[in-house]
Structure formats: structure tokens, C-alpha cells
Length: 458
Ligand SMILES: Cc1cc2nc3c(=O)[nH]c(=O)nc-3n(C[C@H](O)[C@H](O)[C@H](O)COP(=O)(O)OP(=O)(O)OC[C@H]3O[C@@H](n4cnc5c(N)ncnc54)[C@H](O)[C@@H]3O)c2cc1C
Image (cartoon, rainbow, N blue to C red; front, side, top):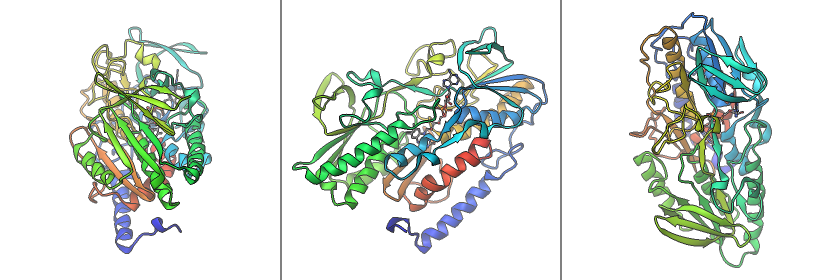
């Protein structure tokens, strides 16, 4: 057993207590009448014979299928999504550090389908919300009574001058984000791991510290905290091999905060201050990359600076899936332009009452995580039943999201919050990185994701 994986008696007692909280929190609750937190759903299931179409079969689409099945047992539910495989995207962090296998991250999409949900394994090609029709690649026009949009977000590596997805894995460019949710592959994590191994070799022969940049974009992102986690995990792994003094990490962010909630942000900044070879460059965005000369141009307001690097990790700019971004379903203007225009409390489209959205595609910039989808799924279950009965939608999403940040090998800060405050699931001090949260993220969550969450049981 590795040094950091040992639990002392106090931690073990806390883990047991946390386990009982998990069980008590409704993990095994009756999901027809209870939410994941054990709270009663506000609306009983609707027995109407409605046609419900779900666009997208990733985390949000599959959870929506499981929960809609319970909300509307007599409905004809169709899920349209091309991916034969399903990728556990959160695993990319551990994969990039060589701590998780591909096998642990991928399952057959068909293994998650609830009974009586029809799967059209093809792409949606257009929405016609005026006529309540979805168009798909092979099946053509599909009419619906209720539409649930769960198409996720798209990467835009090309928005950084000189950069494109093909450059990941070459010339010192890492990106754990690069993946293909249609193929079910986590290419970026594998390529990043290979480059980290190269970096470890370079450290041995380096005569001056290697410069490693981590750059966050100025768009909303999913998996907040993942790049920071990678930086701190790499730093700690290098430390264990005695090479950390020969590496300087710079984390570049357009924001003045690392996490969206103030107290978690402060807790994280305090931890980072202890690392002398980590610099945080606030208020800066990567504008241009010259991979041949290994130079990054960073902008801050009207100023720009050039930074040389040996390795650079890129979190790509992100926007809503193009089918939503370029449709009448998108927010037309303002900072959320292009993301799906839903009421943040009910998840119902602001203009089209028979359309709902959940997951990364919706216009909530800080709440793009699997944890956010878990909570949104419960709200959806209640509100779909209410909408079918033409009742008021009374169960409201509180904006919960989670950004687990690895602060060292074996330690995780479990940042659970909404835009106003911390929303810890457990009773332990949430601002403290803990071994048990490492166990939760590395071992429990991959299992729970496939066996509970994706079946709408969590
Ligand atoms: C590196 C990384 C680390 C992360 N870490 C965490 C973490 O630690 N904790 C956490 O909670 N979350 C984490 N996340 C975020 C989490 O994975 C996402 O928020 C979640 O998967 C969002 O689900 P979604 O269904 O909205 O999108 P996706 O899961 O991306 O699903 C979109 C689906 O749409 C389908 N699709 C695409 N085009 C079409 C089309 N034309 N027609 C029909 N279907 C289509 C795709 O096949 C895909 O199945 C991380 C993500 C990444 C990338």
C-alpha cells in the first residue's frame, strides 16, 4: 500500500461516517418518490402517453432517460445519440498521470439503457422548435411532445491563434480535455501522460528549470479544477522523484479566482502559496501559441506578454454544441450567448415550454460538471412529470456543482458549491483537502458513476 493511501484511525472513522452519510443521502433511495438527497419529489409520475425525445446520450442524456422513464412510465421515450461507447470523462485526470486504465473509463452505451427507451444510434441534425420536430441523420423528422436537449459542449482549440487539436501530444502541448465522446476515447489524457513521462526524463538532464504553463480560456468550461488538479498532481509526482525544483509551473487564468466560490477559492490559494515553484497569473488569457519556438502570447486587457515554455497544458475554449449554438434554442445575446436558454431553476426553455435542457449545453457557466448533471437530473424528473400534467414546476435547481481539486497525490479538496455558497454533501470541514476524497474520486466515483449515477439512482 502506498504511503498516502494509509488511513489513520481518525480518518477511517470519518470515512465510515461519510459512507453512512452517502447511504443516508439517498444513494439507495426509492428513486420514484425520492430525490438523490432523500428529499421527496414534489410531483408524482405522470401516466400520460407522451412522445419524449432526448437529444444526446452522454452523462446528461442517459441520466435524463433513466429519470424520465420514472417520471412518465407510459411515455414513448426516444434517445438519439451516435455513441456506441460511453466515456467517463472525469477519469482523464488520473489517466494523464498513469493512475487509471482506459478500461476503467469506457462502457457500452447500451448497458445503461432503461427498459422501454428506444435508442436511435445516429446524430441529430436540426431542431425545429416551432413545429416540435427534431431532424436526425437517418430517421428524418421526428415529432415530439417534450424534447430534452443534452448535447454537451464543443471545444474550440482553433480560437487560440496557432493552435488546433492536432497539436496535442506534440512539441510539449498537453491537454487532458481532448476527447471524443462519440468514439468514447480519451486521446488527450493518453498523449498528456506520454508527454509527462518525457518531462520526467527532461528533468534529469535539465541545466535550468523547465517552464510548464497551464492555460485556462475565457469561456465557461466543464470539469473546473481538472487542469489545476493535473498541475498539482504532476508537481507532487515530480517531488517524489526529487525533480520538482527543476520545474516551474505557471497557471494562467483570465479570472481573479481559481474556483467560483469565494471560500473554496481562498482555501485553494492558501494551499498554492506553499509551493514556491508555482506562480498564478491572474487576469491573463492565452491568445497565441508558436509551437515551433515554444512561445505563448498572453493578453491582459490591452497588454500582451510573451512567455517561453517547455511544456504547456491547454484547456480549450468551449461553447455549446453547434446544433444549439446556431439555433433558436440559444441565448441570443450577452455573456451566455450561444448556450441553451433555459430557466436556471426549472431547466425549462425560456421560450419553448415543451423543451428542457440539462448538462454542459445549458447557459450556466459555473455549473458544468457530472455532479451538476446529477442534481439537474432529479429536478428534470420532477418537472417533466409536472409539465406533462400541465402543473406548475415547483422543484428548483439550486445551481449545485462540484470541482474536486487534487492538491497532492492522495489528497483532494472536494469543492461543492453554487454561485453563492459552499454546498457540502458531507458534514466534514469542506475546506480541508482529505485522503478520503481522493479515495472517493479515484475509486468510488468511477464505480458509482457507471452503476448508480448513469442509472438515475444517485
Ligand atoms: C477532463 C475532464 C475532467 C472532468 N472532471 C470532472 C469531475 O471531476 N467531476 C465532475 O463532476 N465532472 C467532471 N467533468 C465534466 C463532466 O464529464 C461533464 O460535465 C458531463 O459529462 C456533461 O455531460 P453532458 O451529457 O452534458 O455532455 P457529454 O457527456 O459530453 O455528452 C454529450 C453527448 O452528445 C452526443 N452527441 C454529440 N453530437 C450529437 C448529435 N449531433 N446528435 C446526437 N448526439 C450527439 C455525444 O455522443 C455525447 O454522448 C470533466 C470533464 C472533462 C473533459
